Each structure stands twice: as C-alpha cells, then as structure tokens.
Image 1 (cartoon, rainbow, N blue to C red):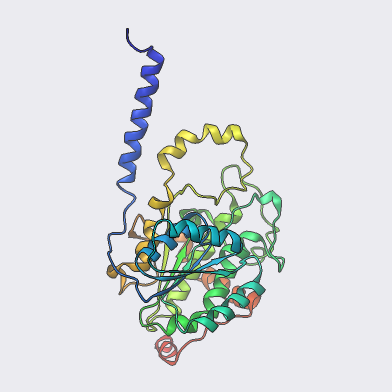
Image 2 (cartoon, rainbow, N blue to C red):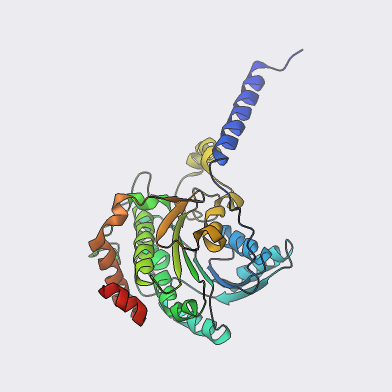
Length: 337
C-alpha cells in the first residue's frame, strides 16, 4: 500500500524547494582566500551575534586579534565562549561599545587607543531595525537607524583613523544592504526622522541608513586615496540573524513567509562570506571605494551616485559628531590636482 497522495505531494514540494535553494546558494559566492590574519588587529562592531559573531569566528580562526565591540558585555563574553568551543586560535577581546550613544563611541576609541597602536581591519558590521512607528532614538536624540547604522560608525571610523593609517594594509569594511537602492537622503529630516512613514513592505528608515552607509563608504575611499587604507562596502544578502527581532510582523505573517525565507534567506555562515572576503582577500589589495555582493564587485545603483547627497551627508555627519577626518599632506596634494 502506497503513501497517501497528499504526503507524496508534500514530499515532492519539499524536495523541489530544497533543490531550488541549493541552486540559489551556488550563486551566493564564497571567500576562497586562505590568507592568514596572524598578528593583525581587527575591530568588529556587533560581534556578539549574527554576522558579527560569525565574522569574529572566521577571523579568529585565521589568527587575528579580534576586538569584539558590543553594547552588552555579558552577551559578548557568552559569544566569546561559544567561539572558543569552535577554535582556540586568535585572540578575542570583548570591549564595551554602545552605538546608540556617541559618548560611548568616544570612550571606546579612547580605550582602544590605550591598548593598540594600530588597526588592520575595521568591520563596521552592527545594525538595528525597529518598526518606524516605535520612534526609537539614540542617547543624543537622533533617529535610531540613522544614529546607530550610520552616524556612530562614521564617528568610530574617524576616531580610529590614525590607528588605521598606522597599518600598512588597513581596511575598512562597511556592511550595508541591497535595500540601500530603496533609500533616500533628506538632509533636513534624516537625523530626526520626522518625515518617516511606515511602509507596507519596507522599513524606510532602515533603507535610508543603508544608503548612508554606501555614501559614507564612497566618500571615505576618496578621502583616503593614496593613504594605504582601503574601503569596501558590501551587501551580505538576506541573512537569518537577530537583526529583525524587533519586527512588528504578526506570527501568522511570519509563518506564511517561511517558504520564501527558506528559498532566499542565508545562514550566517553563508551571509558572512562577502564581508569576510572584503576583509582578507588578496585580490582586493588594489581596489577601494567599490561595493560587493556574493563575493563579487557590483556597480553602484544610481541613488548612490548623487554627489550633493554624498557631500551633504558627510558635512552633516561631521557637524553632528564633531569629528572631521584628518587629511594627510599626500591626500591633500592629490585632491588639489
């Protein structure tokens, strides 16, 4: 006696979904570099979970000293223990950093400089997503997505720039999202979020902050041209992590989305590949200022090529943080040519 027809149909659907996912995963790319990171100092923001934790693991496996910059040190130490169960290589150094408070960013930079004379890789990884209607703010009163995802990372990079320049082959990796293509930069409102309206499928504040990441990466690369510091923006894809834990979606909507998530959502091990590649790949040594997805270089979307927005965002960020990036004589001479 054979299986009931509905079980056969369900099995066929499951096998079909699995095969489609396998085919999609083949195009997601993998970091193939075997480069050792022994002796290198790395800062990873948001290192206690998701992509940050996986990045920390992969770099520690290569021998790096990884500073785990996290808001919750208890969670950072728990992640440290978790990573240590998988590798004994490298160093893991939890340090407090609350990106929702610019004073904490300043204190982290001070503490880091007391311990380290150089920085080889700055992984600007951490990010938050809140429902727009929650009206979340940073300690300084800025809209939470703009404040955490962009402004704090701008400030952190600026405060650590001298340590990056002290390394002969330093890299800044800016983790963004392909949702930047849906973002816009309204300089009059982006810091306070007063113009935000909840979208049906898209969090506009998150998309705007991811566009800020991309604009920041482009301008930073131009500023640092000739300095030896490389800048890479990267999109990890749709990853199964805790990023959307504050989502306002009902449990019914979440269950209904499971088949789609199965086809399109990556594990953290799959999602981390592009930012890991940007941090270590020898093939990117001579590149800077580009954006990557699926471990491949991509063209910028038109919204990222808005030069007034690039400069306006940079000036606004400098004004709000009080941090203005130092330009060496070599860089100044190049900008005047």
